[in-house]
Amino acid sequence: MPALTPDTIHTLTETLSDLTDYLRENPDPVEALALVEPLLDEYTGLPVQLADTLRALARALQNHTDVPRTAQVDLLITELRTAAWEQTDQHTLHYVLDDLRDLYGSAVTSEPGYCRWR
Image 1 (tube, rainbow, N blue to C red):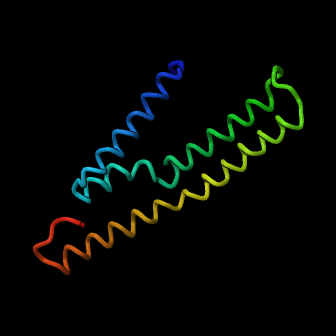
Image 2: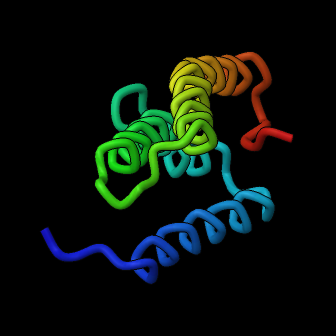
């Protein structure tokens, strides 16, 4: 695996920002859902990955010999783990995409002539 740098992570967040900007331009709903779908995948999506990243950071800090063993550090590590659980709870957002696809599909069949969600 290539070495990660703050710049590679920054590129990732820029891409996410580009996606947000694109979605603000009112793209076709089918395309918008397809672009967001990988972010909300129930196993590999952003909520799950961010939760795993926060847990890994907490573990790395807890296990590193240079990190002081203080009540404040313990509290901060606990906060990271709590935030990880909160992110994990968001993994169900993939069901929202399923429901949106169903809704969009039924809107197309029940309202002929409409090709866009507004």
